[in-house]
Image (cartoon, rainbow, N blue to C red):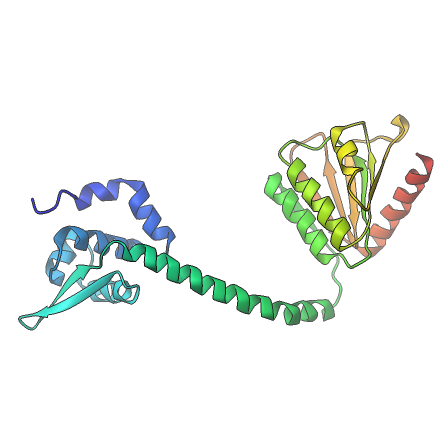
Length: 260
């Protein structure tokens, strides 16, 4: 056997094919590329047989692989013979994609101010969104922070002990909010390491609620957004965007702040 690499066995291994698909190759492109690694320089007939690809599609797949720099061809006896580029070319292909993504990111960053202005000029909307899981909770807070205006406060009411999985996120979130947007005030349900730690953040003040005021429903007010979660249950949060509701909860917060 010319090559110890066996294409059929390779397809049974999830990592090589999956990795190539993750960097942008289709299943057909992976199949043809693997076939060429084993076959070496060859015409389309053996490729079709080895890759189990339709004859009508083989040239299209080869063209795409050539555009990616992973396949080349030479002419022998007036016929094209295709071959896989050196495998090092895969890393070059990834580097090119990374460069392209960085360029796209830079272009998107330039576009953001005009898009944000367009969004700000659109009519105000009131909506309620349910977020679940740790990622959902993080998404809700980051969305509220993004919509907050300079000088808005981050008010936390009936704050419980924070789950260990969310401690790093909330520490960083509070620090960034105080630094970039406005002050933070927290009313905690019980003594906790979180209360002691957050109290040390510049721009953040905390208090401990008297026992008669404590309830198991956490409420956070950030700008026009109210985030409500059941701290005794699973990771579940409802975010309501409504200026009147945010004002109402802020008034309730201010009353409890004075009483504690």
